[in-house]
Amino acid sequence: MLLPSFVIGHSVILLIIIMIINDTEYLKTFEYRLEKDLLKLCTDYGKLEGTMLSCEDIDHQWTVMAPEYMADAVPEVQRYPVVSVAWAMYLGMAVAYGWDADWEKTKTLPYQHYYGKDGFDDMDEHICSQVLGVPLISEVYKDLENLVRRCGEETVAHIRNEHIEPSTPMAFHVFARSTKVMFRIGAALQLRKMGYKMEQVKLS
Image (tube, rainbow, N blue to C red; front, side):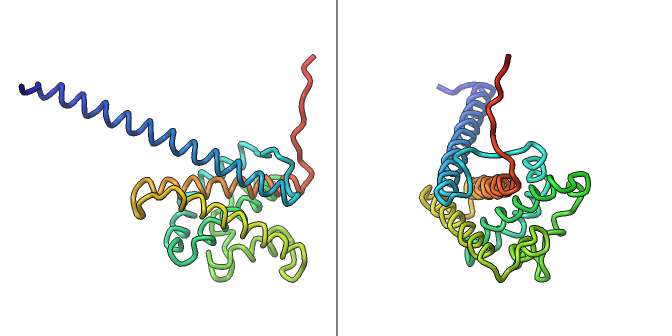
């Protein structure tokens, strides 16, 4: 029995909607698990206190810069997988620092402002030395570099554990969610370093 074309059309549309919903839920779950694990890692290192410090202004800035970051990072995935996600963490620190220092100026800065002399390649050193004021020859820098590397390695492990086919739309979305989490973790670390913390407000 042949079904009318409009019935087939509606079935296809419904199937697509279900697939989109399932993909969205999958990505949300992946992002939640990754953020939870990185939060624990940073807490174990004594750099966070088990809570995710965040700010809407800072989170929004990621949505502004993410397309350009992704354009830089995706080509690095094969050769330097940890770098491709880790630099987002430094970027989160830089934006959080600017949010506290002068947000009106910081929110207008282009993504390329955070480039080093070699562009994306040495963004980490540029942000540490020129934005955060951390000397590259110091224990503070070594500790920070080690933590960022550990977070990057953990993130790459999470991605690989999903066994997603490379160069597919889903692989891209998982990578995008991963860099977003790394950015937010970086911002949280910097917010805590500057003295911000979560406090319970009692409502009278």
